[in-house]
Each structure stands twice: as structure tokens, then as C-alpha cells.
Length: 323
Image (cartoon, rainbow, N blue to C red):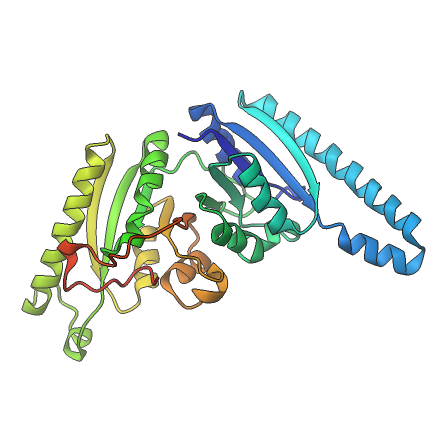
């Protein structure tokens, strides 16, 4: 279970959905909530020093720090009024991503919850450099919360009741399972294990009929693999279903399936080498992250065993999460 949950905030108000999710999880685990804000003070010093000198620059920074700290205290008070979770605030200065990464290590954070919406600060960057860096440089699950509606008509996410987990037989993909299991137990959610099969030949692309002979072996292998993983999860007390879909674009197939099944969350593991947004550009993980309207649980394992494909999936290509 979670013990320390970090929620980066920039004071814009666009991070409220992530805070609500973090509070809900904390109440069910007795975890501590850390509301963390980082001021990138270098820009203030640069502008002020050029115009009026370092004395004014320092005053600008102090004023900004006081304002940010006041907003943090007000936010914490609002959270305490709505929740019995243990909530604390921290204000730091420096490069946002680097400061947050160091904070997670010093405070033994085991879950990061961040919102994707916003127009400035962390919220604006959450699908860019900040979340990218957190995924690359920490081995902590990052729960990227995407509010289901616009802020003109907000709706609170009551819970992640249906979680889709794409699996391809690779060790990397399976690394998300323990993290999903923890969250599913807390949320009393149903997990759907999904495998996407790609057409191997021109004729299969022309006639993608799962009843034709050339699909029999692939589907059988995929079913055996998914049933085996599902059995392990069920023994841990969670509801699990499995499904197989056929499509030429894996990311679209995942997104379409999750939308059709009214899922609340997609969970996926990544190597995150060189950054999710850069190295995996065009990959399934990146495409799903940027195109799906659903929240995502993303995890970069510390180490991945060399086995790339499960023995029970021999002959089924690893299509979902490129290493």
C-alpha cells in the first residue's frame, strides 16, 4: 500500500482533479499527502537584475515565494476540510523536474499524482518535460489524471472502476501488474487484460476475420497467456477479464477498446529511455498517452529481466510497448 503520495501543484487550480484523486487514495491507505510546488526563480533574477539590480531581483523572489506559500497553506487547509488525510506542503526553488525528482528520493515517495490540464507551470508541462523526467528518472508509478470533462462542467472522478492493462507477453509490460493490483484493490476495480494482434500479411489486412484459420494459432497463444496472468491476479482477490482485439494500429486499438468498454484508466509500463516524449515518439506508449482522454498509470521499472517475450507467447510478437 502507499505510504507517501506526492502531488505537484502550481497554484493554477487546474490540478484539483489530481488532488482529489490523491486524497481519495490516501484516505484508503493512511498515506501522507505531500503538496509540492517549485518556483523556477532563475527567470525572476534574470529579468530583475537586468533592469533594476539584484536588490529588486531578490525582492521579486521573496514576494513570489510569500505568495506561493500562502496559496499552498490555503490549499492544504481546503484539503483538510474535505479529508482526514495527513497533508503537508513544501515549497522549493530551482529546475522544476530536478527538484521534484530529488524530493521523491528524500521523502520516500511511492506514488506521484499529477494532472495533465493547465495553462502554466507544472500543469502545462505535465505531458512534456516534467512528467517525462519523473518517469525517466524515478522508479515510482506516475498517475497522470485527466479530468473527464471541461472545467466549465467539472465532474469528480469517483474512482477508477475499470482498468485496462495492455499486455504483449514481454517482461516489461508485465512490470505494471503489481502496481495495478495495488490500485485495483484500493478502488475495488475490475482489471481487463488486453492483447492487440496485428495482421501478419496482406491477406490478413484485407480480411481481418478472427474466425479464419491463420488467426487460430495467434489467438490461442494470446488467450493462454492472458488466462495465465488473469489467474494469478484473481488469486490476489481482484476481478479480472481478458480480451483480444485485431487491428493495424495498436495505440488506436487500445484507445478505442478502452473507450468502448467505458474504462477509467489505462496502465502501462515503459523503459523511458531518453524520455517518454522523445525516444518513444511514435510508439504505442507515447501515442496512447497523448491521444487518449483517459487517465493513465505509467511506470518505469528499475530493471527488466532480459526475457522479452513470455514462453507461452512464442510466435506472438511483442507489439504493445517497445523497449
